[in-house]
Image (tube, rainbow, N blue to C red; front, side, top):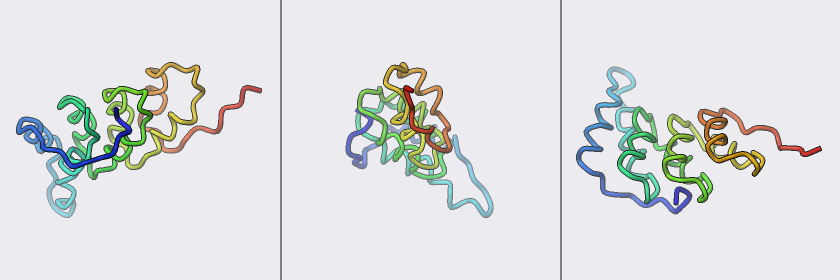
Length: 125
């Protein structure tokens, strides 16, 4: 369940290698180089290694995993990873919360992935 409490996790060595290769930072931005690892260690339990890679590859902070923790538990970890990869805050998860429940989960993920602000409240009128 993506929305569970975050607890630091042990990472598979192969996942660590892929995450480190996904985000090489040099020069003044070298302090951001730990972003993928910071993201990965704070992902919710239940995420497969593939979901962790999808969520955290290229991350500059733990923000994608914090977003994923806010995604409704009715969404799969793969869907949470898709909607929150590259997130800089929880807005993609909040976007999902503002959509009508008649929208499919896959459509909600497609609409909210990369969202910079939640959509206006849905009105049936």
